[in-house]
Every structure is written in C-alpha cells, then in structure tokens.
Length: 185
Image 1 (cartoon, rainbow, N blue to C red):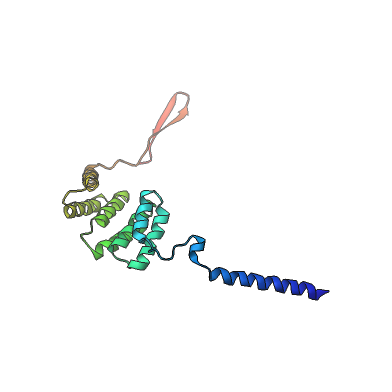
Image 2: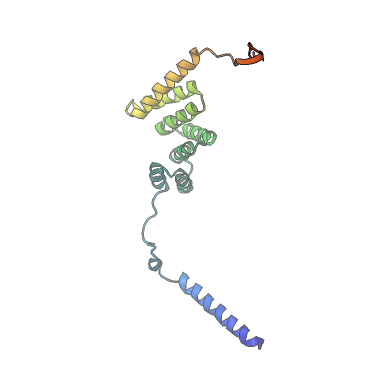
C-alpha cells in the first residue's frame, strides 16, 4: 500500500520539476520583462528618488551606480547627499570629504559638506567650503549664496557671543516667609 503513495509523490515531484524547467526557458516578455531595453543609470534613479523624498531608496540606487561607475566624485557626492538627507552626518562628512579629495572644485560636494558642517556646529569650516563652492559656481546658485550668508552670520555670531554662566538660580523656601536664592556656581 505504500508504493502507490510513493508513486503519486514521485509523479508530482516530476511534474513540478518540469514546470520549473519550462518557466526558466520561457520568453521574459511573457512575464512583463523587456530584456531588449537598457537599464536606467543608478545616478538618475537616485536623483529622482531624492526629489521624491525617498532617501533610503536613493542611497541604494547610488550604491548600485557606484558598482557600475566606480567610486568617482559623482557617486561619492550623491551617496554623501543621501546620507545627509537621512541625518547620518558622520557618514556624510566622510564620504563628501573623499569626493572633494578627488575633485576639489566639485560644487555639489563642497556645498553639501558645508551643510553637514553647519549641522555639526563647525561654522568656520562650513563657511570656507561655502566660499569655495560660491567661487567655483561664480555665484550662480541662490542656495549656495544663502548657505554662505548663513555660515558667515553663524561664524561671526559665535565669535562674539559671550558664554553664559552655567549656573541656574532656584528660589528655595526655608521657613515661613523666608526664601533663599541658590545657584550652582
């Protein structure tokens, strides 16, 4: 009685293997895949995803682009921009510095590194990168001009700010009608 079940199972397994073989030999167009088309460049896909606010997907597209183009200034700058948009400031700074090392005049990397440095509170260094980006861009881009103005204002205000004492005052009641002012100086 065991043999008929075994033969049925064997027949089903053979049928499934036959289906798998026929599916792999079928025409890709049958499944909605156009194998004659060219793949879209990962940088273009990443830029579109960045515009759509899909930063994690954009980062993956930029990594794919780096796989096909190599880690050049374009791919490094794009990866750094996606890291910046995701709030990964340390990673963004490292990647953008690598991009600038490859091409010290690449405006998007200079500008984005300046933004990272502003976010980290390094206003003077950010100002220097924005000045380089502004000079390379010949002042054509409004966002770089605005970033430079912000960096100048922040770097100058941080130089002239007088540090406040860290002590806070507290009013503490001792007895009826008696209060003492305490501080942590």
